[in-house]
Length: 380
Ligand SMILES: *Cc1c(COP(=O)(O)O)cnc(C)c1O
Image (cartoon, rainbow, N blue to C red; front, side):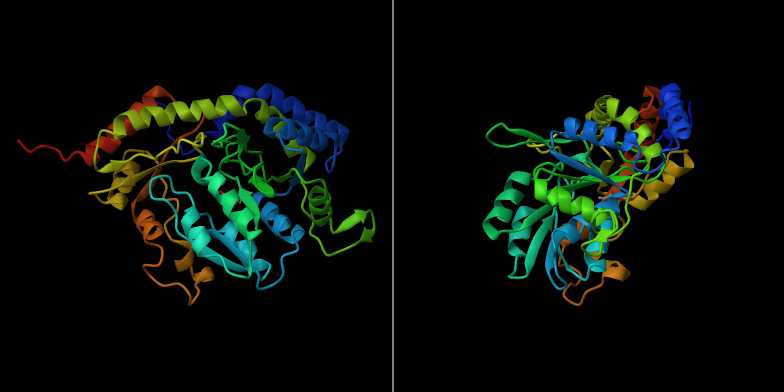
């Protein structure tokens, strides 16, 4: 059996090696390393795939969030609401721009931000909501958009883990993650569902003026070369990464299917065990399974992780700490018990290997290894 990894980038590369190698060679030949034609082509292809008017490529997913907040002209002290259960990048850029991160709890069954908690956290200084489509499925965007509209707030969707995931509104309209709010952001970090072979990111919007502003902020605040209208940043996707992403974008739907196949296999077995909670998929969203995350009840999550490691199976804890207990984000407003669901999830979650190259034999071995631990052996 092939060695089990959280993500098998090499196995995936081998299947598209010829195309990728040729694309990289093409960029080398052209020497158009920055803002070359590959970047423009990738932008257009991603716009078509997502069904969004504007894609602005940038250097990584964290920059994408920062550029979004800069383009919306938020001022120091303005409040931005996001989930306590997420990757720190979201809160980081809020802090960097001297805005105030306001954290709220999530749903236990699908890990996504709780709209009722969002609404309860709104004050006169609130400027935006940042829903994070965690692990690969959309948050309840219909409710988030309704709240945002009633309170006149911007919505910045962090889709770093959910590119390609689709949300169905109650009137039947279907939209892709990142194309529903004011701005969407994503990351092309190698292990993300659409991963480059280095860093990359993108920002999406349907608003023409905002798109202009986002491009300007990402390019040193220039509207015209050497005319700087405001202070911006330098954040670019390079041509080599764009060329690779163009190839991988053509495979993205098939990659999602491969991940869903693994999740279904896990679900079918694990859902029969009361000590394991399988990830819920809300009826309003598809799930592209950036992660497959179990909640481990009635047995020690860390012991299970060790048991799996002893059997050569990696498993990760996304995330071990609620944001409000991270040293960098400590805030006297928050205390233990304020976010009971997030606090519980941080103690119980365990993400199993899920990727596009998984083999049946590996899946079977992982499932059996989990069950060995979960089902106490009967002593004879
Ligand atoms: C990966 C990730 C980011 C940051 O992306 P980078 O490209 O690594 O900067 C932001 N938000 C979430 C939810 C992520 O998973």
